[in-house]
Length: 314
Length: 256
Image (cartoon, rainbow over all chains, first blue to last red; front, top):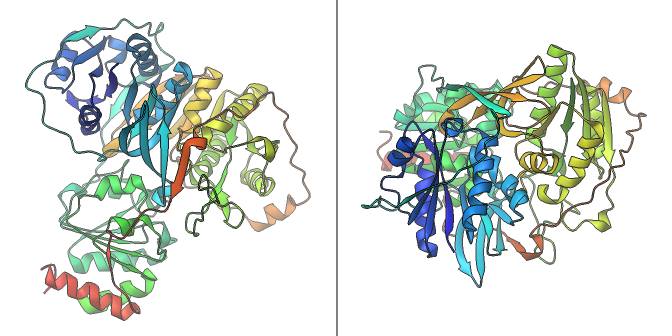
């Protein structure tokens, strides 16, 4: 039995998360099938080149040229029915969220999400997941023929394959024109800000409370020659503009210095900054997950520490 | 246009989480609960659509300690009606999205809305998120990670976000289930007087033909993460900590 991996792609490039899933599948052992959905067989061939899989299962149709949850779900369900895999791997991405639960119900398979490690366990698999914003770890036994949604970065992607896996075409009834129709692709609005190029970043989290104390964080950033940034709740509340969001749905950064104040360290945030060279975290919660990721930290009131640090830097 | 918005209570993560004796759940006895932050966004988006399109908004929740107050808050924010879905605590082994999805789906079938809005995540979605489960149980289209919803001519136009800030716009037939990430405006403030006006209002129950489903919680154990390999911690008062950070920044060459 094979392990089926959903391949996500954008503008002709395979997503890093999908390459990581292929590596994970190889680690688990057994044949690996990559499910590639694209607008034509030529596009499938381009995407499939170098994928470390034994077989590429291809759905080629204009309706799946771009991601749309309805037609992707139909295709995934059809692929599961066609190859009856012992495990289905999806990345914890928008597509992973959209598709995994629906496929689980449609195919009668158990599923587990937020997976950070996955190993064989008896006839099935043992999965470790992050839950409650990363404050707890869950160890689950996933039976064979399960579905796992794996956190990006859980494994490091291995090298691309030198050979091309054989491509099998899968014919899927995608419906007349789909109930979810792609209108346009939107490029990120940068507003002239490119945090990916910032060598130093000061990031504030929900504990900021409101915009009253934002000038304090901005003053600290200015003294450090850093860009100011925020976690998702800060952006959702309108305290900082969207181009300054770090994390899963924001920008992924690798600065030399990442000083964070009042950010708990939810998995979605860590995905965007976990590879920073030096991470310093201030948080009032001694069990904040960020202390498991940061290099240096302090359990403190950030509104007391920041002014003192500003004074020392001035 | 009829909108149903789902409201869920979830543990407050700034409080200390304790585990139940069997290690399969958190100890829910002493922990505080608050409205799911994404459901907060979903409520705001529903009320914005009511204001822009004349929709009616119905808020629903699984009946639990605090759900009555949560739904009164939804009414104060602009929902037109609210219902609690009764659940016998003795009959439910798990409160995961997977387990409770059939109950919500039954309520949706009863209320027959054009649009269902629910927050994209809850912090205990170990077995999958609610919106896609609702799509599977109702057979309606579902789209998650949505940050804009507009209605026109019986269709919804939504913006779906991807990693790195990329996004796409879709036209979606109704009825549809939307897993909302962010409303088009931050959630509004509710005046205390509005909530006081609702103190004597009874939130009715909505009897539904559905039962919780099984999940893998029987084969799951929870644990606190081992942070011993984590950060080097700076101790002391604010001045001690600031001094330690300043020294570190000097040592690493970030400041003179």
